[in-house]
Image (tube, rainbow, N blue to C red; front, side):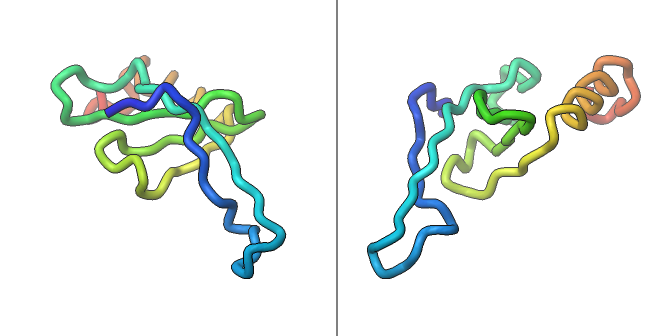
Length: 88
């Protein structure tokens, strides 16, 4: 399920002793490139400078992939151009 509210999580750089804790936030939205059938759904987080975090909407607490914004744009342009027919 898409989450349009900020998601907070403890940074991997925070100490385990309770001190030096930092939380990071991302606002996730379903990508306009996700299918409507519920099978191939990805979410992207906005507001991260020069990066595009991507995750599986069916596993919102699972891992996220982080792409440079220019690499993500090139990937999306390639899909639109038919360079990856299995993904279109």
